[in-house]
Amino acid sequence: MPAIQPTEGKLTFAFFYTDGWVPWAIMQPIVDGLETEYRELVDFEYINASTNEGLRIYDSYGLFGHPSYLILDETGEILWQSVGEQTGDFIENALEAVLEN
Image (cartoon, rainbow, N blue to C red; front, side):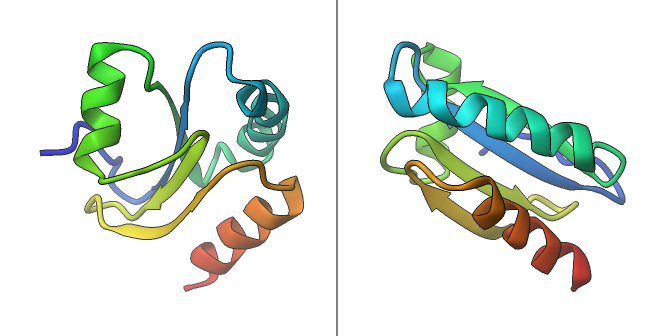
């Protein structure tokens, strides 16, 4: 069973990364900026897939590649997912689209 516990009434954005992987270093400030902008509407979870617990959570969602991203609804259902380096606009557009529905 996945270990991300959604918050009632909020979406969850999960950011899966691994230590020392260059795309993580590129994506970290982008995700941090989105968290600052959307924290009232979305919970942000940062999951280090280099750790045993993080890898267990990562595997439980059947993910591949780093960094990986999920947007979950309040029941834990995956509404959106992506992998690899992305632009902030790409992720923000996904957040906005999910929030509008």
